[in-house]
Image 1 (cartoon, rainbow, N blue to C red):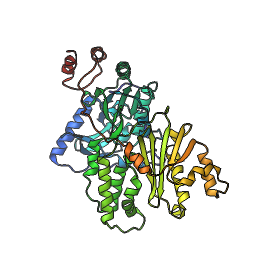
Image 2 (cartoon, rainbow, N blue to C red):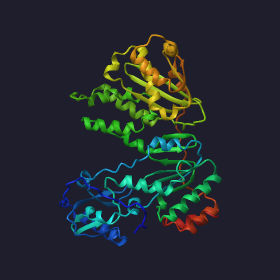
Image 3 (cartoon, rainbow, N blue to C red):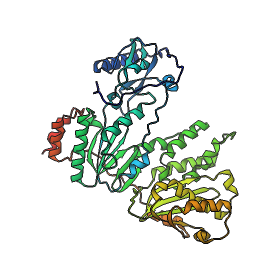
Image 4 (cartoon, one colour):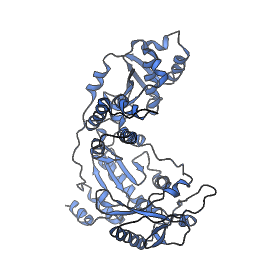
Length: 471
């Protein structure tokens, strides 16, 4: 059982909610055997116990990633619908990556059965009851599938590592990334993190951890001292996507591809033929235009550039462009791309003159990258010459005056630059991934620290690996 901590998992329900009892799903005999195996294991660990609760939810089996092992999961969808949502915030992924600027050495720790390391409040335990062929059971620890589980676990991890966050630790639910600028720093940072895990009795699965590497896969990206890139193992899901046949499949593809839109210049323009199929009352017709957009997005993802991480000590450069097809912006530093941003024009913007469209692109860039540009010196380049004189023009309409008020909040200059696309294209550096391997290239003192702390890493080769690292 996990230790007692200040945070307990609560399941607060909407007023007037009555207990929900559902029938179990039908399963094949071999699946029942797998369920029995899971139940025995959870009972032995004290994670579940027999129940007489008026609540009951069915179970199903889900294959674990990259294995043939099946994990029993409870279908809590009905419970989640009547649960009051916990508003504890999960961090923005882009913000997490921005902290890594200048880091050269990384270690990643994946907590073992992370959610099971937080106890459920005694009064809420009966609400987790699940029904099987072998009886009714209830969880004593937080289970997968409960709507507020990520928020509660994020709260726990933030409380554990609060004094290390924004310094050398990034936490996203049960994934911990330690980053350092030098190997000497990393040795100390890693020791502090391992000690903190030990103090709070949080355990990691050794086979899923990586130490002392110069390139790390984290949150579906690849991070190195050179910047941030798309994780090729995740991109394969997009590139293998079958041609959509219904709007739901189009939405699914664009949602997955859109996760990496910061890597794709003019994402919105490219995707426009596909997004048009999602408009209200639109007829679903897959034509050559949709196929071309579908293929182009796949191609762009497989050739996505390595993006540099922003440095607040350096000047930001923004390139903006606008046309009837949409807006496109590029954020750069020292000739290297940090991010792309784009969007399609709204209906009322289709009537704007060219001058106003270019100004819309500038405003869009300032809004979407405000967290980088506000309070920083920046230069904005546009291929519309008259924008250079926007601050000295006397006759402006109300719309332009409103935009100008927003622009004046920034320490920036607007420059005219023809042929922007060529400048940006020349700045791109294509990704080249090094082989990722643990290698156990850890200092001997740190290996001894692992043993001294008895950190509970699970792997049958652990002892041999430590021994090998000494010689």
